Image 1 (cartoon, rainbow, N blue to C red):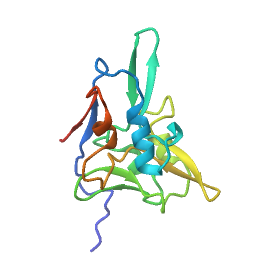
Image 2: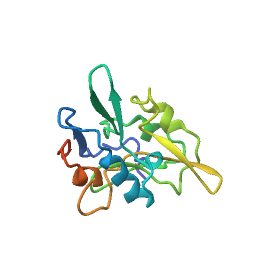
Image 3: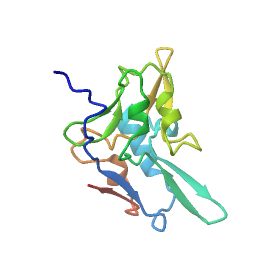
Image 4: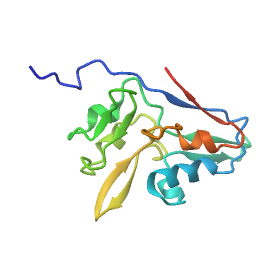
Length: 156
C-alpha cells in the first residue's frame, strides 16, 4: 500500500547558523547565493538576506531555518515543497510549483516576506527559498564565501 509522505516521520535537515557579531554586512553571501542558483549577481534572487538594524548597529540574516515541522511542506497543494530523502533538506521543486503562495502564507518566519519569495518564469510565479545549496558538493555557497565566518552549516 502507498504511504502518504506527509504523514510519515520527517527526516531532519541541517540549518544555517548566523553569527551577527561577526557579520560585516558585505553582502558576499547574498551574491554567492544568487549566482549559484540563478547565475546572476542580483540580490533579487538571493535566498539569504542581510538586514541592517541602525538602532542596534548590526545586521541580521533572514534565511529559511529548515523547520522541524515545515508549514510550507504541509500547505503546498501540489507537493512542490519537497524533503530530500537523503539529507532532509526542505526545498521547492520549481517544476511542480503552481505559484499559489500557500507555502509563503504558511511560513512562520514571513513578516518581512524574505524567506519564501517568488520570481516570474515564463510568465508564471515560481516560489523559491533556501535549500542549503542542495546538490552542491562544497555545501552552501554563502558559508563558503563569507570572509568573516559569520555563517555556519550545522547538522542536526
